[in-house]
Length: 506
Ligand code: AMP
Image (cartoon, rainbow, N blue to C red; front, top):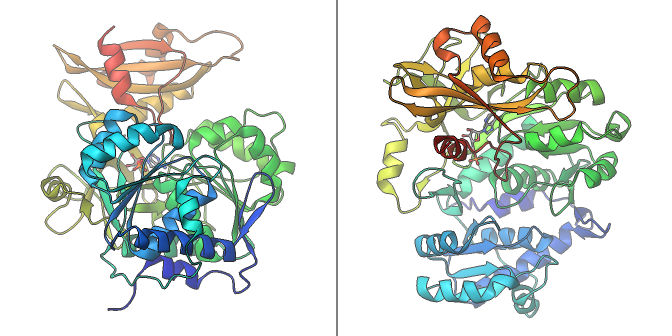
């Protein structure tokens, strides 16, 4: 068997001089590549010493620290399956994840130890160790007694590297199984497509329990032997301070929206930058345009998901378009089909399906769900709606479950949101469908007014009147409600399920 262990691939790209920095911490101290190798070697030895075998899961619910990232690498090296969990998850969610994934080890924050012990005992998890937000705890203490060197465990391409539970808003959360080959394929492509090189410095402010921060950002750095300014979270003040030392930034739309609100943010701050990448949720045109005007940089928007990493990206050298996620990445096939699986016409909205080495293996212990989400010829149904224009640029129209069917006609919320967002005095909007005895669903717009708006405040009647001129009548919201903000998850996605609940009750 040839070894397809992802860590071996990453390590083969580490700089020859292992003293070069890999992680630069908020206080300026650095972890060199040598440090990363030794620390992950110690933890890999510890995992083996605890009696874990390749294929065993290691569930991890900790804050973002260098040690947490190194724990991920240690799992790869030892052939264990890394299972990161959002620190926001509470008792009943944790109980579900532990019972479902049955890890051999659970690494938690010290304040949760009593709960973790209790849940681990009932789920049959043999070991619980602690890692705090300063990178200390029983995990590190136990690893300190281990040797630095570790002979990597060979893995086949299909062997699992990670399980990431999707933030599913309906039904049970699903564990997406990602293999060493899935992750390696995407890491190789992104590193080349976005021109990563050894002199890059990535400003890393994303969480590492999610595909964006853990795979997209970290793998690009490790695959190019470059360095990252490794910050615990996004903080706009820190971003202003650190961007002059960076060459690449990756963020969700909310980060960009916050940056452009800062009076001190502009060209000077971005003088050393070569690339700004955005994704995980749609980027508003207004943010895209304002960012370009302020910095001279054009944000590169890309599209992907937990179940396969990145599928599409705007070009590095060609035109990066607002409202588009660009072209399918090399190695990813992407098609847009109707409900019967037939390709739709150019510009028509349909269901996005993908196929490629990066596309995940299936959902953990859910063979029926997995079978449902793949076509007979192995295309994965992303659940996203989108269209392709004459030049091949792809645009995302939203999740298919957010599609509104009113009086038997399809309404794509994005089309209406874009028009409302461009109206004076509007900060942002979300269009949802609410049950209606007459229409099945009634189009409803939730609108956030701008705080700083000069002049007239938009009114419900004004918005509806304007939309009537621009759209077919069935698309015009029956109701416009105002809110002070839109509920978003950690990756900046608007939680339409919460909005539907909220306005159902009013
Ligand atoms: P996650 O698995 O949490 O990364 O969520 C993936 C979902 O986020 C995708 O299926 C899309 O619905 C959405 N998404 C990711 N990138 C974009 C983007 N650039 N524009 C619009 N939606 C996006």
